Image (cartoon, rainbow, N blue to C red; front, top):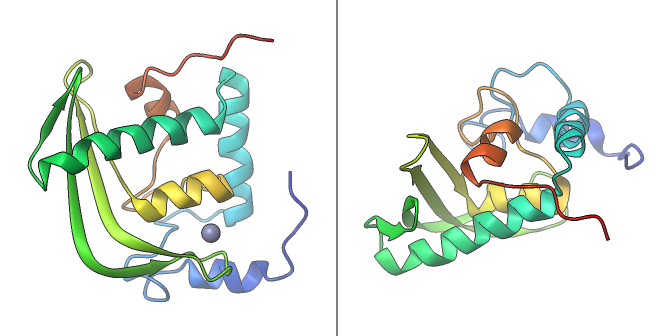
Length: 157
Ligand SMILES: [Zn+2]
């Protein structure tokens, strides 16, 4: 667990609706963003899954979906569509990171589940292990990710 960020209160504030984005990052979750990160990390740890596995799988699917230019692309068990919008979004963790507005929707034909993420979601997961608050539009549940992405623990070296 990383040590407490001295700008933590400001970060928490920027994650509220209407600050950096209209809908915010916390949904109706009443936990601090630090608690959300810690508890999601614990779920992955318990399942033996590295968050890096999630990031790799999501990036690969976005990459494949880009070819469809907004139309769904068939990728094995999935249908992927990628929508690109004008403009930029800023990371709430205050390191001047801006990410283009691109959303990926993944329909899993096997489980019937749909998940979606933005490039900012990807950045938040990759660099901050932040899957957003419950009720947030882009919240990704660790259990759903593991199921839909068919993630298995890596072999112990
Ligand atoms: Zn960031």
